[in-house]
Amino acid sequence: MLKFLKLPVLFLLFFSVLLPQLIQAIELKGGENIVIPESTLIQDDYFVSGNNIKFSGKVDGDFVSASQTLTSKGMVGGNLISAARDLDISGELGGSFWGAAQNISFNGKMKRNFLGFAQTINLKEGSEVGGDVIAFCGELKISGKVDKGLRGGVGSVVISGIINGNVDIKADEISIMPDAKINGNLHYKSKKEAKIEKGAQITGETKWTKITPKKKKGLTLGKLFWKFLFFCASFLTGLFMLLIAKREVKAAKESVFKDFLKNLGLGFVFVICIPIALIILLFTVIGIPISIIVLFAYLVLFYIAKIFVGYALGEKVLQLLKTNGAPAPVWSLLIGLLILYILFLIPYFHWIFYLLALFVGFGCVFQAKKYLTPSPTTA
Image (cartoon, rainbow, N blue to C red; front, side):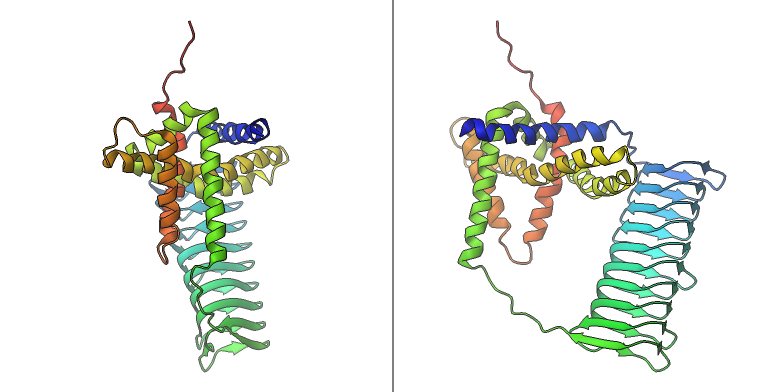
């Protein structure tokens, strides 16, 4: 049985080590203000990360960025792919826009599709999207022109621009303003009927599917049983990781609290940016096998990240209880994972604890090297 389980665990550890080295091979600049002036011409794809990025130049290929803020006034011949806190796009795109941010503001022109994940998305007056708009956000405003349709799930949506296609959306609140023109069907799912102002033009069918609020179910015995199974699986995985790569696991554990904020930031960036990089790799023939390998490693890290955090948390708790000597790794792992899984059960706040554990656990893998103790040598 041990031999049977040892092979998959070796694969887990191999890829958890491989992925950080693959990413560290790419030059990433952090904590910098980057200005790309209007005179800049890049005849290839462009990858950039920094604190605040201001782009006014021209990129013939794709533009990929990760930052706190991105202000783009330049021209991108391909796709613009970005993860940031604030995105302000007012240039021209020859391809599509894919963005994840807290706030996305678009006042430019693009030939293809707009895909956005954010708290607020604002397609301003004068903006033009040549394809579809696909939005998942808290608040969506469309004052510009969309040549095709609108899809997605939002909290509230206000349409005062032109949509030359079908609108198929799920939202809490929908407002169609007097200047709005929808040259297609309006199909929407909502708890209440859309507010369609006098003067708004809808050429196709308007169909409302009323959403009936479902009663929220508390914890059931079935849910608790599955949570218990997931806890046991995490604990057993952690034990085998300690059995096979004790030095590496302990090094990652040491980094959890010593580099907490750095781990949190690194984890956030890599959790968001790795899928974006994988999407880009899939568009190249040589990148397909690499993307498959990295995807597997990414999913492995996604699963084991909380184990490092649980191990560190359990050790910290046992140290506070002033147990004699250093806490045993098994007890640290057990107590820490138990605390984490209890936190994951707290209503309304469980996702906050889960994301903290995910980001910090993801980041600590990249910081583990500096805490790695020399391997014992035999005489």
